[in-house]
Image (cartoon, rainbow, N blue to C red):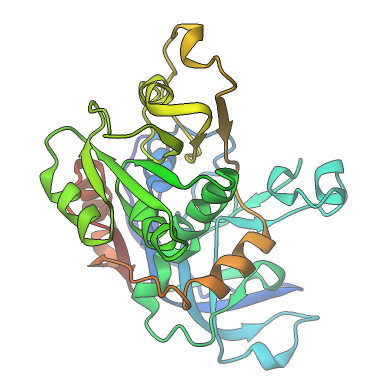
Length: 327
C-alpha cells in the first residue's frame, strides 16, 4: 500500500510504501476510494492537538470498499462501501459512554490522530465505527460528509430551534450545513473572510439570504451562530450579532485564544457552546438525512501524492467547498 505519512509536528507529509495491513478482530480492511481533507488535518500537521501518534497517516473523511474482515465481523460486509469518520473507537465503559455521550469518551480512538487514517490506498478501521454508504454512489461527493457534514450536523443540533442562523467560515462544513438549514426552512447568513467575494457568492448560490465579511453586521439579529473558522476573535463578534437568549456554537476542534470581551455581550442569557467530536447516532442521523435534502458537495480533487498541496490550498482558501484526495 501507499500512504502519506507525517513523521513529526510541523513537518510535511511524505509518500511511503508500506506492507498491506491486515484487519484485527472487529476490524475492516478498506480500499480507500476517496478521503476528504479537513481543517483538523491542518491542526494535526501543525501539532496543535494533543495526543498525536507519530508517525501517523492523517485523514478521517474516508470512503472505501471493504476488502477483508477481521474475526467476529460478518462476511456480508465484504465488497460494501463504507464511511469512516473522526471517532474511530470508544472504551464503552466510562461515565460518558454509559450516558450515551460517547463523543466525550475518556479513552477514545481518533482516525488519523491515534490510529492511521485515510491519506492512503488502504486503511484498517473498526467495523463498529464504519458506516454503510449504500446509495452513496459517488465516493468523492460523499467523503466530506464524514466530518464536515457530521460536525456541521452536531453543531446545528446545538442551535436548537433557531430560525435565523449565522455561519462563520464558509468552507466545507458550512457549505453542507447551509443546505440542511435551507431544507429545514431556516434562514442562513454567511460570514467569510473580509473581501472573500467568491465564498460569499458560493454561499448565496446555496441559499444564504445574506453574505458578508466576518467584520460586518447582518441586517437582522441572529437566533444562533456557528463558528467553523478556528479564530477566537470571532466569538465576541458573533455575540454582538445574536439576539437575547441566542447561542454561539464553536464547531472546531481547535481555536485561537478567545480575547477578553465586555460582559454585556454575554448578558441577557446568551450562550457559548462547544462541539466535541461526534457520536455514532449523529452519523446515522445525518447519513439518513443527507440524501433527502439532497446535500450536494462542492469538491476539488487531488491525487494522493498531492496531499501537501491540498493542505496548502486549504490554508489559503484557494477553493470553495472541500478538498478530496483520490488514491
